Image 1 (cartoon, one colour):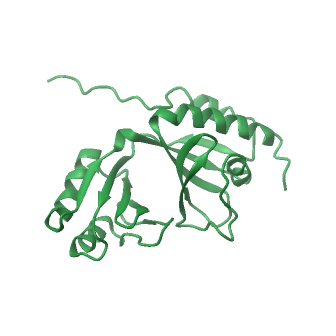
Image 2: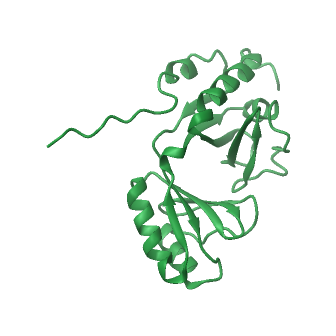
Length: 199
């Protein structure tokens, strides 16, 4: 039996650079190899209910939101489109499960796991770092847990998922082809906070 092919993260080699970031205010880590699938389904259809049961949470229907269920996170991308992410299944298995749930209603699901990687940005200065390259308001009074913003960070399109209500924990979904650009941008933007000077 042939060995399984090796998997390489778009940010392979960056873990040490992230770990060596001279800042107590910002932490950057990659969360590679999450399974992801684009899902299209009518949110009012029985299929959407079936998907909700599969994920352990109803699909979010408000723009710029995400819902995390028992087994996956669903991120709203459009009126009938979501990005589903999970560490519980492989990409192909996620695609098959979602396709089975929505097939009767004319919905569709496609494995896009290789399309993006995930970067976690956390710490007391995380919001200030992201604000250097993002024009959207990330203040906790606006961007609370469950907010998922499709925006630009520097010159790269990203999805920013807010993970707490304090402005200190974010998950960035970035196209694999832009991952190194975003990583370098984050390292440069974080350098200002080496001494964690902001209150």
